[in-house]
Amino acid sequence: MDSAVLLDLLGNENRRRILRLLSHKPCYVTEISEYLGVSPKAVIDHLRKLEETGLIESHTDDRRRKYFHIARDVRLEVNVSRHGFGTKSAYPANPSLDIQGRCPHMHIDLELRSTGDGAGDDRDTDDGAVRSGRGGHADADAADAADAADDAERDDRREDGDDDRPDELAALAAEFDELQDLENELSLAQRWVHGRMADLLDRVNDRLGVDADSRFYAKLLAAVTSTDGSHRAVVEEVDADSEAVEDGLRRLADADLLAREAGRWRLVE
Image (cartoon, rainbow, N blue to C red; front, side, top):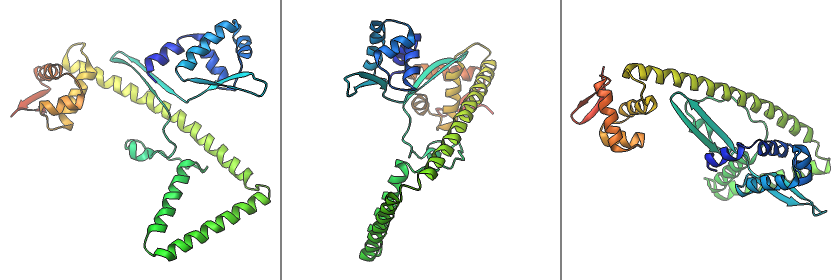
């Protein structure tokens, strides 16, 4: 979802209150109208706008009463600072996403106790490797026997009245508690990064001696150090207009921050 569209939707207080209510339970129009203290007609108009963007959906119960509920999980980030303004909206990643591999600067010490879809996918992959690995029919027979034993164990648990449910519930509760802590820690980490970034960009401005587009110049400096320093490589790295990049590089050179040798830019020692 486009972040600008989401910001426009959430700019209305009544729509924010509707979403807050629906985050607790599905509701029908009369309930929402009484909660907001506005007419059903106004509620329907807000619901229509939320429905058009796919944020909410509706379903009808046995009594033909139409209930509305939130349809998707969305995260919206807004960054306002002296060095830039930006918005970002995103949907939650798949629980099986390799967060450590995708975020090399982060280390998340979190033991997920519950068994979700990601764990199921890993288990299926491992079973497939057993069946197709060395050992041929013997491995396949062993795997089939293990599957049969698992099926028998599940049948026994069903006959015993699902005695493992309290343990599973306790694991879910513990994981929820850990994820809440992680959510708070990530929020604190974002504040720390935001503060460090603002301080760094202030220092870039000081080195340039003017109130400039410090984020853009910081990107140029980073691109020069992370590429071979050629104009083409820097343009591709910062994903900006070629002429704007050239002007920025020359300005950094005028400030004695960059030098050009054999057609390639480098930081001044």
